[in-house]
Image (cartoon, rainbow, N blue to C red):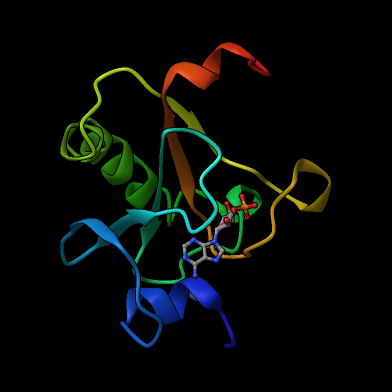
Length: 112
Ligand code: AMP
Ligand code: ZN
């Protein structure tokens, strides 16, 4: 599969890593939209988007959320927004499920 985030997960494409373990990788977004902008991905391509999450593969989502406080702390913040874009019309460009962690003063102009 020609998937950008699979290539980042396996090291084929370099990334600025914040956190890594056997299941997930967190790295800096290449085009940050906030002072802190980190992406969290499952290393395995378990789902292309949140639309593909089901009872069989949802464990990794809980795992990611259980790790997000630690990842945010490693990025130097304890106040942040978590965003998942699901589908083209929601702005999803990479079809490997991922969660954005955003933090910084410029979050005041916020969507939600
Ligand atoms: P989304 O639009 O929700 O699919 O998010 C994809 C994100 O991946 C965007 O915010 C991009 O800036 C980011 N991105 C694309 N290529 C890279 C890369 N090579 N390294 C880090 N982030 C990337
Ligand atoms: Zn992938």
